[in-house]
Length: 174
Image (cartoon, rainbow, N blue to C red; front, side):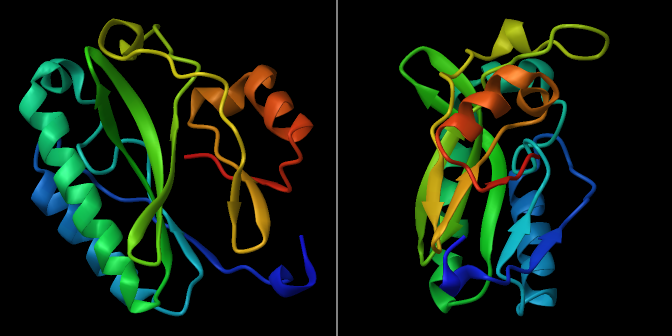
């Protein structure tokens, strides 16, 4: 971390999600952000914007379209100089659908990273509905080199080792 980034206040927002009620989930995130306006970063759960586990709902193209619009609106909210937001959502790229984390700050989507390790056991059925992302690159944010593994990415050493090798100074996982 550079001299300018000696202190970082991170709020971990463990929240209830309403699967498929993107507007309610976005409003709940806004409420948490308003309550913690002195933080630097608010970390929301995996797939918080669409609800978890989404199961077959994510196969409907309208869901990913709506998620993209709301993610852009949440990003615009960060233009007020308040806390940045790390938001779990989905992203469609052609026929591929990804489980993502998006860093929102300064009124824009600063970076997105796609989940690499997709679980497929117990209640998890991610390999059927999502495409695995590539090994993620680090994100330069406020003079810090962040690694952003998503859930299972942080449970297995491959992704974290890759991020550490790239010079990640802080790993933050939803």
